[in-house]
Amino acid sequence: MSSYTEHVTRVVTEDREHPGLGTVAVLTFAPPEGEERRPATLGPRSIDAVTGAIAAALDRAEAGEIRAIALTGTGRTFLAGADLSMFADPTAAENVRAMTRAAHDLQVRVRTSPVPILAHLNGVALGGGLEVALMADVRTAAPGVRGIGLPETSLGILPGWGGTTLLQSVVGAETAVRMILEDPARDRQLTAEKAQEAGLVDEIAADLDEALEQFAALVAAHVDVDETDTDVVDPAVVGETAPAEAAGAWGGRAPALPAADSPEAEEPLDALDAPHSPAETRRAWARGSRRRAPPPSAAP
Image (cartoon, rainbow, N blue to C red; front, side, top):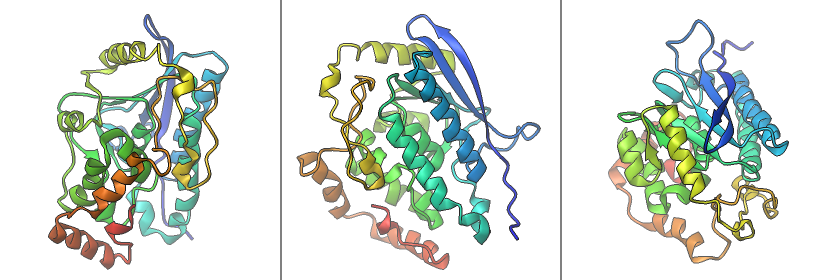
C-alpha cells in the first residue's frame, strides 16, 4: 500500500485580451486550495493536470480561438519541479516512467503549436518546473527571482523531462553542461538576472502584464519569418525518428535540436569532453551513489 499523498497542483486558466497579441490563454500553476503556502510541484496527478491544461490550450489554438499562450505561477513559485516525497515511496515512484512520457509527448506537440508560448517565471522554477518553461518560445522572469535551475543530478536523478535535450538549444552546449553537471554539485542555482545573462531568460519583467508587453514585442519581431524555414525535428526529444514539423506551426520557433551530423550537433559532445570540476562531480556522484542512483555523467 502506498504511503504517498500528493498535493495536486491546480492550473487556473483565463483569457486575456492584449492589443498586440489578441486573445491570450493564461495558465497559472497553483498549489491546492487552502494550501497556498506550499509550492506547486509535479506528482503523477499534477503532471496530468499541467500537461492536460497545456494540451487543452493547444487544442484551442489549433481551432483559432486564441492567439497566444502564457504560463505562470503563484506567490514565489512558477513550478518547483517533481514532488520529491514521491521518490521515497516505491509504489509512487513507479509512476515516473508514465510522467516522463507525458512530458515528452507534450514537448513534441508544443513544437507544432500555431501560436507562440510565453513562460513568465514569477518565482522558483526548478527541475521539471524549468523543463516546462523550456517548452515555451519566450521566457521572462520577475526581477530578483532566485531558484532557477536543474538540480536533479545532485539528488540522484536526471533532468529527463527536457533538460538534457531542450536546454542546449536555449543556452548553448557549454552552459547546458554546466547547469546539469556542475551547478547541482555546487548547490548553485540562477537568479533571474543570471538566467538572462545566460540566455535562459529573454527579458526581465516585473509582472505578467509587463511580460506580455515584452512577449508581444518579441513576437512582432518574428512575424516576417518564413515558416518554410523552420526545419524543426523534435520527437528526437524522446529518442525517436522525427517527422518534419507541421506546416501550421508558429513561424518564429527555432529548432529545438540541431540537424544530425551538423557542426551544431557536435557542440554538446565537445562540451562534455571538456574538463568539469572533477572534485565537484565526484561529490555529486558520491551523493547519488548513496541513493543507488546513476552518476551525473549519465545525464547526457
